Structures are given as C-alpha cells and as structure tokens.
Image 1 (cartoon, rainbow, N blue to C red):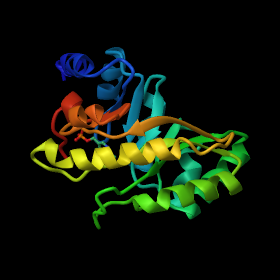
Image 2 (tube, rainbow, N blue to C red; image 1 turned 90 degrees about the vertical axis):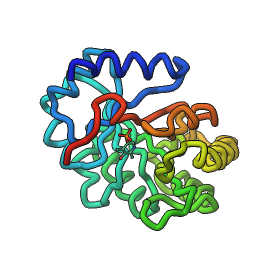
Image 3 (cartoon, rainbow, N blue to C red; image 1 turned 60 degrees about the vertical axis):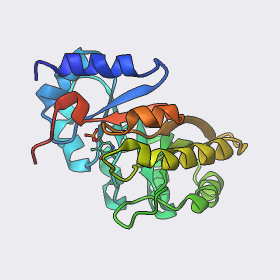
Image 4 (cartoon, helix red, strand yellow; image 1 turned 135 degrees about the vertical axis):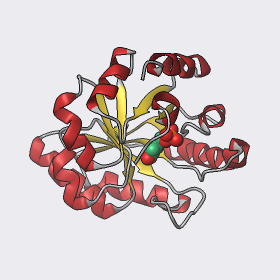
Length: 220
Ligand SMILES: *Cc1c(COP(=O)(O)O)cnc(C)c1O
C-alpha cells in the first residue's frame, strides 16, 4: 500500500496532463481509496453498484464513475452519486437514467459503451449502432448529456494487438462528435487499462481507467 504514491506518480509521468486518470477501485477498501485521493486522485471508477453504496460514505470527496454494466433496476441507487456513467449500451437503460435524473432535477453525463472487438463476453453495442442510439437518446431523453464513448479492449499479452480497436473507436468518436445537438458535448474517449493504456493514449484516448497499476493485483 505504501507504493500507491509511486505508482500514481509513474502513471502521471507516462501520460499527457490532459489525459484524465480514473483510478479503478473495485475490491479496494475505503482506506486504500482515501490513500489514493491523498496522492492526488480526483476521479475513481467502480464497476458494481453495490460497491459504490458500501464505500460511498467512507470515501473522501471525489468524482465517482460507473464503469461497469448497469442494470436498469439499480440506476436509482447511483443516479445522484456518480458524475459519469461509462456503460450506456441500450435505449432501455438510457430511458431509466433519464427518468431518475429527471426525478432528481439533474442532467446525467453518459458515455456510450462500444464493443469494438465484438466479443460475446463483453457488454456494449456494435460500432454501427452508436449513431442511431445516440440520436434516439438526444431525441427522447432530455435529462441526459452524451459526453463520449467508452470501450474495453480484449485482453492481449501484447497491447499492440488491440491498437486496431482503439483506432476504430477514435474514428467513431470523431464522427459522432460532429453531431450537432445541445445535449451532445463530446469530451471523453474512455479507453485504456493497466495493460494497454499507453497504446490507447497514442490512439487518442483522453480518459484511462487504471486499477492494477495503482493498487496491485486484485484478490477476489
Ligand atoms: C477493472 C476495470 C478496469 C481496470 O482494470 P486494470 O487492468 O486493473 O487496470 C478498467 N475498466 C473497467 C471497465 C474495469 O472493470
């Protein structure tokens, strides 16, 4: 735990300042998370609603990101806790986010999760579904602002093997960013994890989600 500080410093040296580092804190205790916040972390990512709820009251002020698959029946628990939902991949989920955001009188920022590599095991829409989904959200859901795209690349020993997926997502991001709408304001291209973030940044990522390289291997 003592080297969380060194780990964060190393990642910050490896990335441009305008790439946002989101510390992925799944399985980590509030104590470990607070240590990371003391070392300058401003944004944390969790992939389970339950973990957000368990830790929320014990973690110092920070921006929370929902980066994992989100079931519609759990949106209500996190709608006023997270600043960005990375995993919107259906109209049904968007509809529920819109409804719950409306109840709270807020506008929710979301990213569209794209399964660029078309892996069966991963959530996310196919690349060609992105524009139609975004257009439906903009048309129907006035409490949602679309801020960009997210992907989880397949795990490969050699991160060069996933460069092509990052390239594809960046091209899709650039084309979606040209859609003109008051509730579309592209800012985040969320791609890159411990194993592949350097390649992701080279291909245009501006938000990396890093767990292991900060906190060490996860023990489940
Ligand atoms: C766990 C997780 C990460 C971080 O993975 P590491 O390999 O530990 O950096 C990033 N994104 C998502 C969606 C995750 O679930």
